[in-house]
Image (spheres, rainbow, N blue to C red):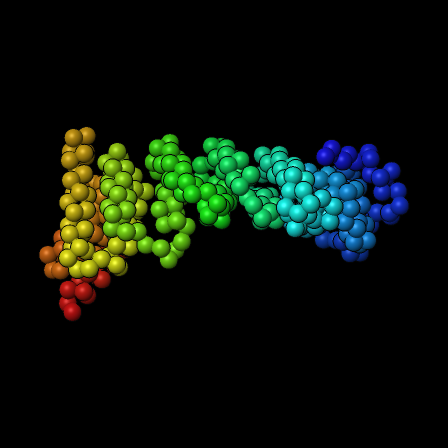
Length: 346
């Protein structure tokens, strides 16, 4: 569909009287809109007032969105026009599916064009989601949509809107593509490799391993694999907090479901593996005690283990962080020590 121009408006809407924006008799701070903006939105108010959902109304929404891509009302009205003029809600009947795909694809491309300069625009991302929600079969769009999100993340690897949309696509499309979770795990890994400090990528790996469900817990086999993955990541840069927090997340989850013997073994294994990474710092000529991320993770693990010996060691590490190695969070570490003392006192 060709984008409408301001020059075409008077002839295309000759039967309508443009409606001016009503800011009241004495506007406190009137916005200095461009003449093109004023003209387009005056006609849009007339269309909205008339309740017209037509081909020309659809074209007008394109012009208005080009002038202001953040206008939620216009995006919503555009979807109403699409449903009224081009998209058959009963997709798949009477050969309407191909027609639906054509118009949905065109609007996805429009959203991508407008989103190029607005990668964190809520309305544009929601429009993409709403378009895909309108189809019964999402298979023709899934890979292209994931490719589009990957392109956006290539520009800004921590774009929350892009990651959130990607999670929605994967979660709601996995039932029709069995290998989607495996492919997404590979994608999360590739993003972590590009930037090991990207918490968004680590969060995506957690999301994928849990199949998108908060109520799903990892089996011991998968948890061990993920904990080892985190240890490997921490080994590349022990000062990087991201893999350590991922490790603690995996361990904390397992502590809730493992029986006592398995839990003790799991905690002992990863306390030893975490302690073993001190050698990486020694080899680099660094003081292992100065690595707050490593010490913080060990404190958590030792606290999970419980028992007098483990808690005493955890308090020793926390005191070291409070007084020498991480004084900016002195109050936090002192609080942790106080809480462990209360546990020992019981």
